[in-house]
Image (cartoon, rainbow over all chains, first blue to last red; front, side, top):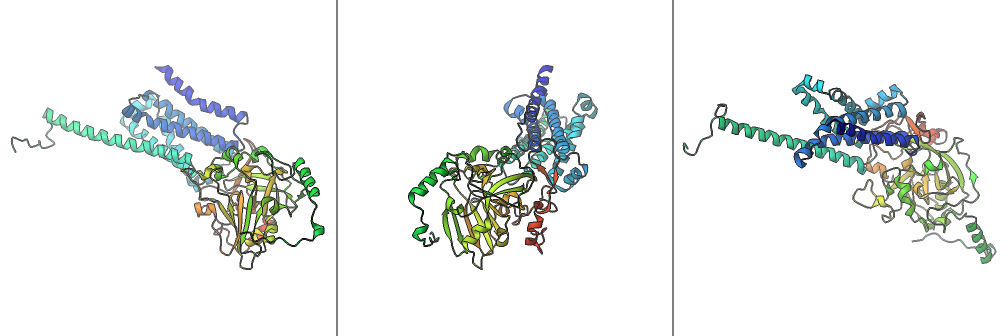
Length: 218
Length: 312
């Protein structure tokens, strides 16, 4: 049971190792800093998308990847951190005044920064202790990941000229997964209220709802 | 619709056939014929050139970087697309039409278009609107010479440029996902176009211009953002009204008609205060961007009285 999760982490770091290899062998092209930022950010977005796909995959396709979800989420966070570090250290040479001004003045950076901040509490509470400690609030807190995925997709869209295909496709995937999640949620609510109603009728305990008029009495 | 009239030439001026045939053979053998008759992708050295006094002393960016990191949406939106996909563009024969409000409109074969002028080495800074920069050793001719030859009429106020449309060879012009309207169009005020820095480039690093850099003929305006440097030019038209320009059409609030390099006017989505210098590696610091990309002494006069914040 433990090994596969470790394997998930190992697989998750392969893109990083490959990117690092390209970086040291001059394989990132004419603008290596931008290429590094791009690759790290893209993997972060892909992992966020993978994380969001786990529930629909289970409910719609019967594929259960639930036990990898924490690993996928944490990997996404690590890639976001590296992406931000590449920006701050390599792109901006730790010029904090420029970094601050950019985040305040330019929407795509504001959005990216907010996404990073929102991921921090999720990463910090991705452990058994926090789950036990937070109880029901944990689920609510971790719904923030939907917001983060949407922010990441918009951040990507706004960072480029015109409307090239790649960020548009990623934004469409994120939008699709969020819609899918809303529909699953609605269906669950409907089912649970329907089953609650059935329970009430069968048990006869609840008197909250007036009993349905029966054919005989009508 | 060829309006270019051949001047009367005295017999003494006419070169005997054997002389020009042997000259052509020589030129071809020396690989000096501007790439004419050379296999696609092959690059030919260019004939004797003059060095422009506008050239910068800064070290040019490597040929590898200049030819592998390009924005040329006719071949795709990725920086690596032009190098990967522009090789198949047929650049010979190539026709350039000069028309509109001129007294001598004409349609030229590229060789004839360039022949009267001495090619110049022009090493210019290049600043992309995406906040990166290069130093590029172009080979070209002053745009002003070409305009003077066409003899603009008094009513001509602007120059409009047009890129080739050939979806069969320009894959970015085909398919479902079109990023810009084709043809790519650009424009200048006539006085900007007449400025000696405005260059029509036909070469790079002393050799024929590679396709991914806009072969066979492209505009180079070192004080403006790179997207003003329209590539694969087939049309130059003198007009009275400010012509539409491609990126301005695509997002008018982000890309202006002038597009002068200006560190004080940010792109709405990113800063223009600094630039990443291509070729400076992982730890090269950003460079502060200069007003008019450092060509203020030459061009600032063109814009006196113009609010550069409004006319960005």
